[in-house]
Amino acid sequence: MVRPAEPSAWLHRFAMLTAAATFFLVIAGGLVTSTGSGLAVPDWPLSYGQYFPPMVGGIFFEHGHRMVAGTVGLLTFALATWLWFGDGRRWVRRMGIGAVVAVLTQAALGGITVLFLLPTPVSVGHAGLAMAFFALVSSIALVTGPGWLRVQPEEPGAKPGAERPTLPRAALLAAVAVYVQILIGATVRHTGSGLACPDFPLCNGQLFPALSSAGVGFQLLHRIGALVVAALVLWVAWRVRSEHPAIKELQGPALVAICLLVLQVMLGALTVWTGLAVTPTTAHVATGALLLVTMVILALRLYYRYPAARHAPSTSGANSGAVA
Image (cartoon, rainbow, N blue to C red; front, side, top):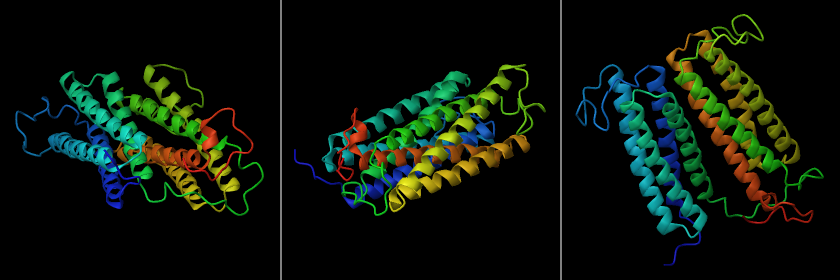
């Protein structure tokens, strides 16, 4: 079977639509937890034995989440099929298959979450897989874009040493740190530890409080994780902006990551100060998802620009403009 060497513009647009729908699904899932609606519907996959129950109270959030999830599932199957027949790159087609596996697994975890009354490990896994799936479909949207296959030009004014392929690995490390922080945050949410430290930036009025409960431990771990993430994201962004001043494909995500980081810290503080109000709590989840995707995109673009970073040890003569 002969497949086109490059994806069509419409395939890229459809991948973007799937990524946007997935982000909406992340928000819908965040609302379910923020409003305490996880068990508003006690059965699965139907809701009170119906396809369309009365959309009142918590049922609106829980069943609405299921409807959005079903739509994303259909979009994912369509995207994977389109990739299979419309993209000549095997690794991209495998990304499509991975997305299908992820969305099926996510549906199963959602069902288990309801039927077994919100077990914490399953709920955290459900949240974590949702973020990984969002990053995956966003990556598919990126690599099907018109600019991905173009050879990147040498940027004027690049500083000496910019060709060293350490920056892609640093960006990948930052993306992994963001994802681990998301998992810790999900643990805080699903163990009811959101107000174990009712103040911010201190915890129970202390910089280093006694670990009087598991909730306090989760809160402190989440706050320490935020410091680690902030340090890594700012370090990577500073290197990108100083070593690649003329590459807008790298400068853009670096600047967005800084803005999202600041917003995320502010939303974290508001979440505590407002006693877990629905709006800042859900926005905190959504912004964390956007920060993860931004760092993944930045890492992918850096690995694309520097193929030598994928092979260790790297050679000093690696061509920084080679096509991945």
